[in-house]
Image 1 (spheres, rainbow, N blue to C red):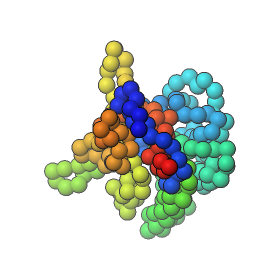
Image 2 (cartoon, rainbow, N blue to C red):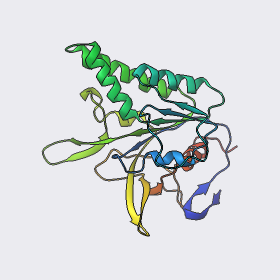
Image 3 (cartoon, rainbow, N blue to C red):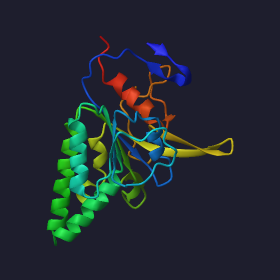
Length: 237
């Protein structure tokens, strides 16, 4: 085991035995899309259902850059990237936009109780699809404040159907919340592995400090996240 600058610990990488699905949750403008700045543009499948430009200048465009306009297009793009051996990682921007489209399509195509029924079925199939993909994935999501009782509330991932409210998080290996601060007169973006009153979670030691415990704040850096997943879900022999 080797300790690197900043408390990051590297371990040898062997054969993969699992793949991580990491949700990045935050408000608009909190730096979620900046995560893509360090991703490998040749081997990362970028599903851009928001069909927006990046908030930074690209050194080179993504080779695999899907811009679906429908829920089915979103699902098909994920399936295509999962099946493509040239694509090693998948980046979804954003799940919230995809679920908004699904909700509108259900409102258009169904009535009454069929609306939530078909919405819930589609979300279930989507989550099952991602579970079966043997590639690491980063999934962006907006946050919402969900009232738990008269005295407490919690930040959670946005979803329309009450059946999945507060339950999306359990489907992901890791849920990180965005954070911002001013440093040197400039905004600085980071990610929180733990935050009170939120649905944040991270496997023990996924983002290790010198003692092997998770750092409470990590870089807003997609490559760093994928590298940590690679080390964590690999054998050391």
